[in-house]
Structures are given as C-alpha cells and as structure tokens.
Image (cartoon, rainbow, N blue to C red; front, side, top):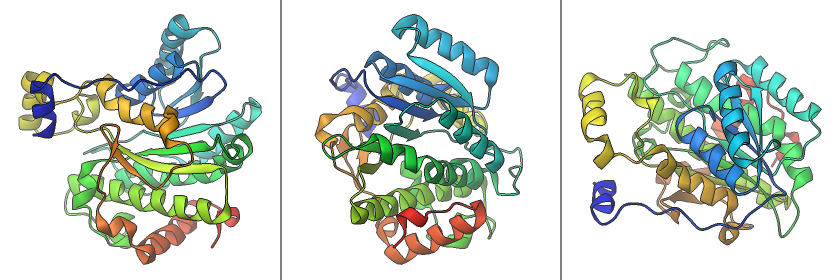
Length: 312
C-alpha cells in the first residue's frame, strides 16, 4: 500500500550520491534483479564492482554490460554458490588472489519459495543460501574490510533483508531449519529475521572493538524480479499485470542498497534498518541480545566460521 501511494504521488527518486572512484564493492547475487541493478549503479559512481553469482555465463555477460557503460576496470566476475560452504571459501580465496582492497560487502543474494531441496551441506535452502552462506562469507571477508577501512572512511557491510522478517519465528532451531518450518514462506521469513539478528549483533561487536567497519540492514520493498518465480499463480498474475503499479522496478529496489553503500550521511553509522533511504522499524526480537548470541554461536558451529577477532 505504501508503495502504491508513492507511485501515485509521483513515484520513487534515486538518491543523489558523490562519485567514489577509490572504492571496491562485492555484490552477491549480482547477475540479475536488485543485485544486478545495485552493481550497475555502484559502477556508475566510479566503484570497482565484483559481480558474485552462481551463473558464470550470465556473470560474464553482466560484467561486459557494466564495463561497456563504466569502463574496463569497473567490474569483474567471481563465481559464488552460497548453497555450498566450500564454494564460499573458494570465492574468498579467489578474491584475496586479486590483491584488491574491499570497502563494501553487499549481502544481496537470496532465494524465495525455492522447491529445489536442501543445500549441498544439508541445510534448508532458504537458511543455507540467504543466511548461513552470507554469515560465513562475511566472517571470511572481515579482515579485508578491516584493512581497507579507517576512521572517517569506514568499510561497510550491507545486508538485504525484507519486511517478511516481521513474521519470522524468533526461535533459533526454527531460524536455522533444525525445526522444520510449516511452509516455504515461513522458512524465507525466518532466513530474513536471521539476517537482521546477525547484522545487528555484528554492528554491536564491531563498535565494541572500535573496528573501521559498519553494518546496516536494507529493505528494498516489493520488487518486480524473478524472486517470485516459485510463488503461487495468484501472486505471479498480480506481478505480471499490476507489477508496474504495485511493485518497484529492480533499479528502484536497489536504491536503498546503493544509498547505504555510498551516502556520506551514513559514514560511521551502523545498526540501522533502512527502507526508501530512511531509517525504519525492525522487529523488536531482532534486537534481543540473548537470541542474537544463541544464533551467532550455533551459526559458527554449523559453518565453521571463526569470529575470534569479533569475540565478546
């Protein structure tokens, strides 16, 4: 309803942001949808973008498109399958081999209502791809983010969430798929709540250590992308015939991610939940320190992530 009202009042407008030619960003899920639009917009700001995705052919097509618009050094593709923890580790090794700095990590990739079964590591797919893959990825890339940031120009971790996190069940076993969700939508909502819990705890710990890194959450809104490919026929019919009115375009959906990545107004600021380039409310349970800690510890156990440098 909020999106409809804004559309009727003139629509959405992109944020005005300064050029940032000295920054390097990784965007997961950057081969289509909001991730693709995010990568393109960051490149237009002068950033060098690492397009991370699990479709190599599509990834190279995206890189060619970005390079044609923004220059030969504006984008590079690295393979990343978030459904495989070994692929996450390989991606990080391949990124480290480039010897590039890392100023921005945008945890954007996700699946919704995906019927294709568990991940290669045996996790429920929404949990494994949307949350645990990004949990491990962030832990492994944190040294690079730390090394590239400094006081007055901190590195940033931006995690793409969803308003569906409001209906996620605040139970660690359910959030991690150890207790089966009643339906795929519940699993998706739980994965988004897990991301919110993770990001807020990460910011708290980074602040406590005085690290030159911030962590924020962004909500793109309801966007007309292939994320709805596995939705019911009614939802897909609405998307097809009324998507132009009720849904954001991928470019519009990317604007909050780009704002969180590049706005000087957010320098040094973390722990925020952002929607339409403004702070919004997050589910109260996402700020539950005990729940954050339990989820964090169990996620470390499941992924083998070593957050020793971000300990209590």
